[in-house]
Image (cartoon, rainbow, N blue to C red; front, side, top):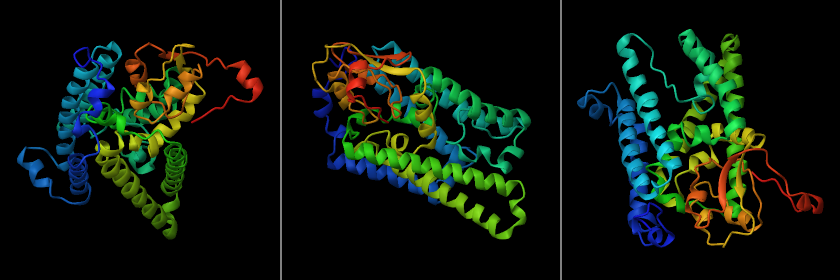
Length: 361
């Protein structure tokens, strides 16, 4: 089965480094330690200068690309018999190398401004802050506004959040590649689902509030001393706890023990907005009726902790706000029960009439 490019459950659970063992916890602690050094110290600055990079963030970007590429090779070696995965992972890596590292790296050498073309608000949370927008060339500012307010929701309505979360986003790209060996560690419990609903929308409200405060501050609030101080403190709190701790230290550090999408599933405000939009759009996972054998592969390999098997057992096609459209559930299904589709969700009228139909996030 491994040689066919579809790693089975037996192989997965026989690999100690892919399960909760002392070495796995040690690996997680190492990753957490690296992110603590990166975010909270300047220890990596001499290393960056030694390899002729401007600062530690470019060093991090270079390492990001390296580990994504290694992880992508591993992922495709395991699941590469799927054309969808071949294309998706290739695009992931190219977007990160070209838009997430190379362009921001070389543009300053040509008199340009460092700019990350693959990120939009609210994931790149300061892109809507007046000081940030005013500091950008007009075409970059226009790209930021149109990309965040027009392109992002339109594509999410048409194709679901997968167009960004599984194809473009650097956070999702690292989870797709470097984090793939531990996707089965993601919890699909009811408790984790409930936590997800509250946590991700709490962060979304936080960034909406912060953006509003920064807009007011940029358009006159600086004249009010206490308000300007409040804006600065709120920005620092969000940057520290969400931008550093949740997205990096925890979001990436716990890959080996809790799965690769802790940040995407529980805290990413971009994922929250795209998920809400996806619920109103055309993306769904279609279920072929009366074919599920309840093997559980789909649920086990869902990196977002969705109990896909429960839907398949009920012959219920579905749209979940948390689904990133990675396609792994369809890939590992031995009977081809599942399929990613872009089309209006057909409700089961019998269930709707009896009150059994529920709409979940």
